[in-house]
Image 1 (tube, rainbow, N blue to C red):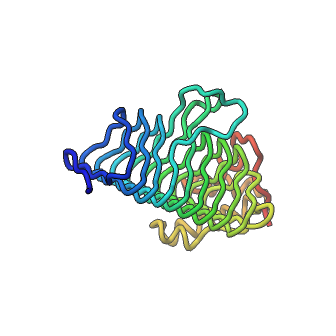
Image 2 (tube, rainbow, N blue to C red):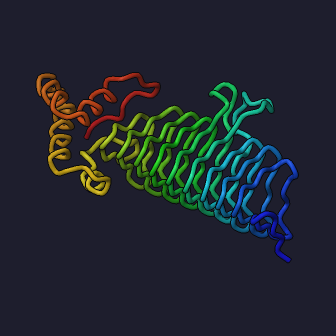
Length: 261
């Protein structure tokens, strides 16, 4: 018999710790596990076998797919059982068998996922990562520790992201790519290792960029690839997006910038 408590629905086979906080409208499916020190926001759905482990916070209206595991201990030899956290925002769709781990004390003690993200099946987001908003992370993508995935990024199926890499906003990485260095915002990267090909025109159109904004970014990309400092200066003054592209290319990085084709 399904158990309903204050508009929270819990399947009788689920294991929910008394120390967990479940807000209104939460649905907990069969064989789910929710540990102590967990908070799950209103309207969130946990499908069969999903697990939300201690020190995890989920926002509102998330969907956690079958047998996904959120808040597992980090796979890091420096981790020694300290209290660290996983924070996930609102309106995310985290699909079956995906895993997202807590942070480490060394990395700031927090793994963070933003809002409106689609995380497809078998994805792994490991300790101390930062995932922004409106990303699409396709099947079996593997993201190593301390990586940053900015807003509106698309990672195609089976992409591997090295530790400490940054994937810039509105970029797309092609299927089966190995990302060993940072990917610049607004670009297409692909290959093994991934290299920059061009501006992500289709993605930018879908994200609401105007034709004139995209045209300036195309010129900016070519100027950056050709190391044309004068044209870069002029385009940076014309376009805040171009200025952001140049800043990312010349800014601080722990892994370096992926090469150009």
